[in-house]
Length: 386
Image 1: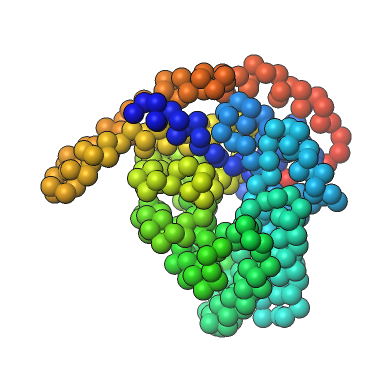
Image 2: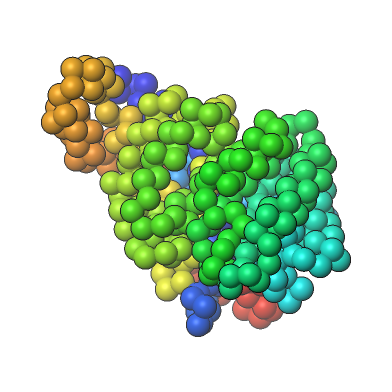
């Protein structure tokens, strides 16, 4: 069992986001840090450091237009030279004045056309980079009752998604993300997993749901959503982060590590952990006050720890307790696994992978932070909108 567990942990893949290496902040202030990347290449270089230290973060997601370049094939080659690949392409149809009343659901046909053209551009970028996944999140919605027709906006959304879906290549997918609220406060056009799921069903098998763990109402049972979408074959990805109140985008596992464990238990019990299962485990975080790279390393480790604990669940004992109706015994099986200190196990796994058993300490010893602070002087630091 221990050998099988180690194989599963060595094979885990966690994608990091380019924007997490850049400056970010709250709606009130973006906090600048020394050594932050100035362009997509420097973001990729930082992501490559995370992969070299953890061994399980081999791809980095791009955000367009924040990571727009003239030659995406060259960017892919640069990433390969750094030891990583380019992952999901994230579209941005929420940062321009034209999108004040929505993007693909906007009542103005010209604005809808502009938004759809951007989504199609992102598919072109996927073709150039070899990326599999197009990730779509829409800030579209309304602030006041009667502002627009709810049904008409759903029709516009469906039409836009269909045009983009039909442009996808044979091995490409559409990941449809949802969010309960913000910046639309009365009604969001894709507010929950059910809405995203319904649109994916209408589109076809290449459309799957992306769960952002911070995008739910308080008290939502996210692992239930995971189980239902797994059962339906429509869970395509996670955007891992953590929340105390709303879409906080904190480090995954920071607010509720037990929730992260419960989510990973559903993944493991469904046999969906391995990359070939098609679930993209991605981070989506804003490191506003903490150093970027160590925070991302710590986030990867948090996912690994939750996964290791999920792999330790005694499936046979759990099933026996469940079938016999022994409530306390079944709960104890889960709690015993969650209470296990898996850090020594993960240190052994990293040692066997010829990695430092403590990636955070290894990063601090590497001198990389001092190097990028010295090298990245001048130019414009990347950040929100850059």
